[in-house]
Length: 348
Image 1 (cartoon, rainbow, N blue to C red):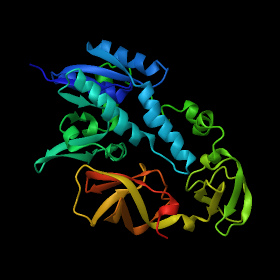
Image 2: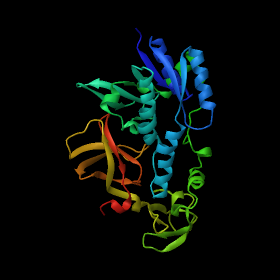
Image 3: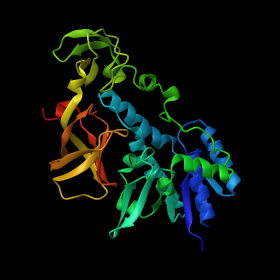
Image 4: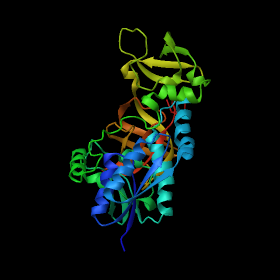
């Protein structure tokens, strides 16, 4: 009997090729697309691909849970002065949470997605590893997976480059072979997150006007809400200064955006909470870490304290941002991660 694999299909080229790969490997393949809002475009594209491949297609209506677990979280984090990563949250709660459970409910032996990462059984356990194509690697956003789920998940694109994927999709005559990659937050219209937040919480303190001040407290200008800024931001400040200034801190309570020179953005340590380990090393330990999706790997010492992790870097890191995830690696293996805490809770 063929093994049944449920493929999370977004209507894009990556998930479409994933489904095709399993079909040619003689699996029973079922495509499932999440309905996260009222836009039907991606569902239509996924249905077209499934029809092209001759496989079944389901639509899972997750609009309510997505709003509760991802969209509300996104808004709440900005309103308290943080900059969240909604993809990390969505993977934990929706794709590898609600959708994984849906796949189980229809009898899946395995669950697959088009993420660029690898799952390898090695040294007696399943490991999550970086993709071979470092430019496309998405292992950072998958650190909330568990060993149990890793044993049921297959990520076939971890060995491919994006060019490989496009070429193979064309060879298999997939109708989305040349569909552009999405570059925006999927639930934020026109990538205008400021308007999205305002539409949800127009009276929030973080959306009220206040002062832009330097690190000595001198008023340099005005802003239209701390939620409109993020650590490290330079553009759009609307202030004149003899040297470039960047956002170094957000003070929601006092409605202040604090700015400083580039050197003020560098810090050697951080505190992180809500830690999740796929494989927990003996702590303290020296590991590699990324403080945001697009950052470089940095060597750090990770110390476990009561209810939080203290992370000390061997070299100062630029623009450590509350709300982002810090993800820990041992070589190319993802060990786990945590959420960077706000400035007030960090040791000076």
